[in-house]
Image (tube, rainbow, N blue to C red; front, top):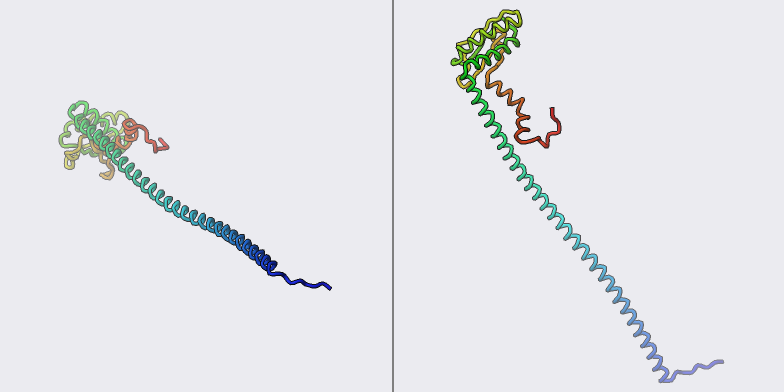
Length: 230
């Protein structure tokens, strides 16, 4: 039968030292583990906060950048539109000046009575052929009464020779063309219901409509925005 021996005071003291050292070691290791874990959690939280702040800054910057871009685009568009309108206005002024000058020159064509009579004859014949009636009325400027009368006789003669038909045209002295008219005639048929306006002013308007695209091209070059041409 084994007998237990009681520990001496020295042995008890040594055992207590060992236990104390062990507990202290465990506490230190546990403390290091807690410290390491705390550092890791701090680093994770710090990184998370940094990412959040960075994302917030990026979002704010992106919004400001987009707003600045939009403002810049609007400014550029506004300036471009104003510039374009100024250019278009200047071009239109030039075109208006060209046709105004042409209108003045048309008025000068009536000074040479012989040439003017020939022109009037052609304008009258156009109306005669278009209306194809035996009796027509012609409206002209008061100042052109005599030369228009001669042109009517010339036109009637040629019309009869070409068509083998009779025709008679008379000047409507009660309703002359306005004084502002540069020249030409207005032929009335269909018992007053049909009018063919062969005045210089009307011919110039037709020329503006027909020739304006080519004049623009000659003066300002091709329109880059136009894809189709007749």
